[in-house]
Image (tube, rainbow, N blue to C red; front, side):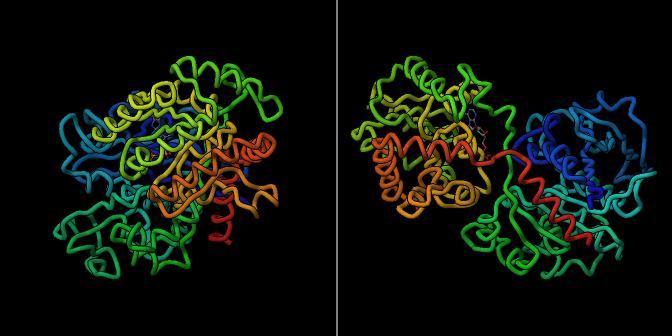
Length: 474
Ligand code: ADP
């Protein structure tokens, strides 16, 4: 069937990125085009983007968009069909999408209300020759788009809201209700009222026709107080209209056949060579499995558990390379581990994409002991590179890795090692299991082959989004 989708977001690869949201927004148009859905992305024309769009045609305008003129320019960058909302009084500023050089912009509520307003207007009225069937809003910045669409009275366009990060909820004080062009009746606990103010994420959650998040397990977790960050009740109340769709990874960027040396499931010699050069680079001499961590060093990622479990892993023959930055205390703990186990544990504090590729290519396992993980990417890189993921059973980690157990090994489907709860005891047992599996070369080779055969590209995600759009528009 197929149709048209207007995607409304504050970030989009390759133009502007602060987190995973941008990857999803930038990857979906091409992936959806392959299954018959035409997606255009509405994005603010931040200062850095205005030059790109200088000669694009104007396809929509409003004389007074919260204090100045707003125009939508239509064009394409890096294969992404774009609608850039040019409103210099709101977006032509120094700094990132949300903050100036020193602090967060004080008028972010208005800046992203304007984006959402224009998204809803385009959805309702269409552009010349182009009307979407679906309005797809991302995170709090676009949360008001389904609300404006819904409060504006019924129209044929269906709305979807995707939660990438439930921690940011777009709160504004109650007195801004009319400033934000929201109706008085919406200021109600069953609607967008939230702790005495307005939450644009909540507004989207209560008005969108459908809600998605970035993995099926995280969709269920978000309805529980440990994960929902205050919105669990709101999300649970919408349970029949909530689903999880896993993100994909860019399989051209993350491709073992494009590494140096290249390797593939059928020709693994390159991986052994990559491990050897990695060991030389870090001065390691590891008899057993070489594990890696490539991560922000934070409590969310469970990095604080490493000092408790790594000593036994090293005693059992394992080794570890950590690449990451974050909490200064955790950075120091990682340095201390490396100092305690020279030749077996190495640490690089910092962000280094090229090194992350060498690590995935050369390592045997990637450790991801997250306390929560909406989707997660590194376990998917691990699968694709035959670098077996050792993951906690939360969020997208639980949905992408099939843990080795008597049943999954008999069935021949295991792709890694999983554990729960997220504590040092369970994590330690998982690493003991990893050592045992590594000691059985034929079994290890089978796990690797399973992992590398697991699809992690955007195709599966795009099919799931397309199926959702089809259901909503049927
Ligand atoms: P999150 O978005 O919560 O940090 P994800 O697993 O979804 O976690 O994505 C993290 C991304 O950042 C991955 O692509 C990972 O490889 C990358 N990354 C994290 N830390 C580093 C680092 N120190 N150097 C290079 N890449 C990193």
